[in-house]
Length: 533
Ligand SMILES: Cc1cc2nc3c(=O)[nH]c(=O)nc-3n(C[C@H](O)[C@H](O)[C@H](O)COP(=O)(O)OP(=O)(O)OC[C@H]3O[C@@H](n4cnc5c(N)ncnc54)[C@H](O)[C@@H]3O)c2cc1C
Image 1: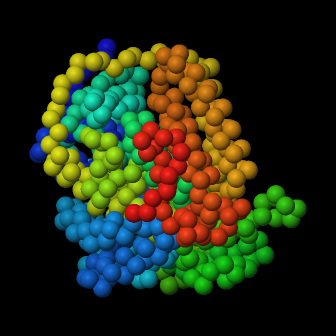
Image 2: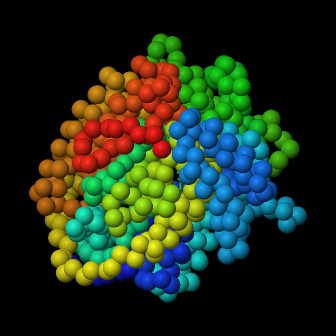
Image 3: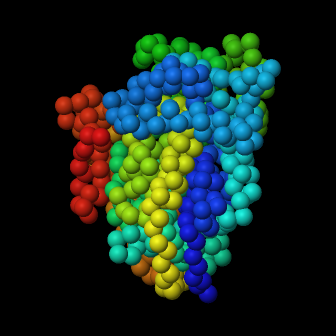
């Protein structure tokens, strides 16, 4: 039976952005935090390397800004980057004060260096367990507030709009029971969409639901062509693309091709610490074998680094590798790129407001332009803290009244076994086609092939939805189709190469035409427009 309910604020997502926002909203009204699985299952939880933050005063902050801008390949929204680096130290200090335990030596915080950072400024926790510690400490903080309620194992399947503003959410619990919640404002902090691709470091919850729902509610999306592919995910058949953190290269790991050559010398002066897109494409090129099409292994090699205890510094990675019979100290580790982080997302201003009243966005689901065309390593946990806080403050400031509506959510028919199998098959096919046609390297002909595959998938998903069927998985399939469509259309429109977006048919950066952000959904138009911020 459908229940009506109301909360002052609804936060979609329990990663760093959603939890930080919920803490900010607490005490100012009641808050519902909705998450598809347990509170600890998010991209945030899996973050390994750390959180970038300039703790050494103004000069350090200025350098962090410069590094962020340089990594973004001409497209960073400078005002957003200024906010990130300037407010970051305060947000991290608060986090430490409230109980987050970062690694220290002799009481002093340890800092490591990662690719494209000009100095060591990455704090980490439990070696390579930074995200889990941030998630744990924020969740613990949130649970001290009686005004925050968690709805775990619950999926937001729709945003309710009234008179042009978002006024509620439709939820589906794990028993497929629907519920409608009215609210003053919804914060989408639902993370990225790595599951669009067959090869991804992201967990199963990262299906871009928030982005798809926001677009359907009329919000503009921005920069959807910029998907960051992490260069070094584990490459073993039948094993998930487990991330091998950038911090390994920060501690001195080399990349070697099948001949044992340290090939980054041929691609970038910063070698293994070049920006992620450069390293990822270099690995892709080195792995193309003869005859063409055959794949050759590329390896991460940290065997020569003996001045640190690798198992102690990287306990999570070491344990995962041990289960595969590999050891950082002894073995070459096979790696390949995998979809990792979406720079684009729901267009949001510096205060988390989207283009739709009542709808806010923060974290990986949002696009403030802070990462430009390529995110600087370890800047996204910081982004979640800084912009999650700001978005919550806007929700409070806007003071939108709560209007009760009794309209119940409609109860969907459960998918039968055949439908469920079909949904899985459609998702897998879409993921493979996005990887092949709109992955690390793209061009017009492949993007168009991707569009044809997306269209077919979307038609089948729509057919099931129109039959009144519903489930978390069907809702995710719908979101994946919607997000794929946005990636494909934006990738087709940007006829240049920049940051994470590389077009074989337009291999050069074209500042004269494209030093701009791509926008989808302007005034209900289907086309992509470009705009300078
Ligand atoms: C393996 C890995 C390692 C990484 N390492 C680092 C690192 O070292 N440093 C760094 O800065 N960044 C790192 N990142 C990136 C970073 O972790 C993420 O960008 C960041 O944590 C995103 O936070 P978020 O709060 O926006 O979303 P997430 O942490 O992804 O949380 C999203 C939340 O939304 C919920 N959700 C999604 N859809 C729905 C729905 N329909 N209904 C209800 N709830 C929903 C999910 O259940 C989840 O709770 C890493 C990412 C991965 C995958």
